[in-house]
Amino acid sequence: MREQRRVRGIGRTVAAFGIGALLGSVAALLYAPTSGVEARKRLGNQMRLVRRRAVQLRQDANLQFKQARKWMLARIPANRNGHERRTTRRPAHA
Image (cartoon, rainbow, N blue to C red; front, side, top):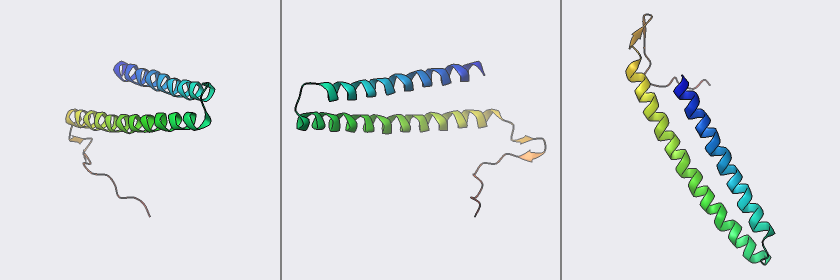
């Protein structure tokens, strides 16, 4: 439990730092003494980098989630309280 809180806290800190860095870079680009065309080009490049990084972070988070789920399922008894453990998702309700 304590480990989960620490990981969650670290994730929030990293996310806050990333958002702050993004906002700071956008502000720096907007207030830099360059032409509008050059500023838009830089901003576009920065946004592409941020988008790539966000995709990478999402993929990493998905991988960690799958690993954590696998780790948890390996430690949960298969037949607890007389019920079988579900290994697949329930179908979506119509």
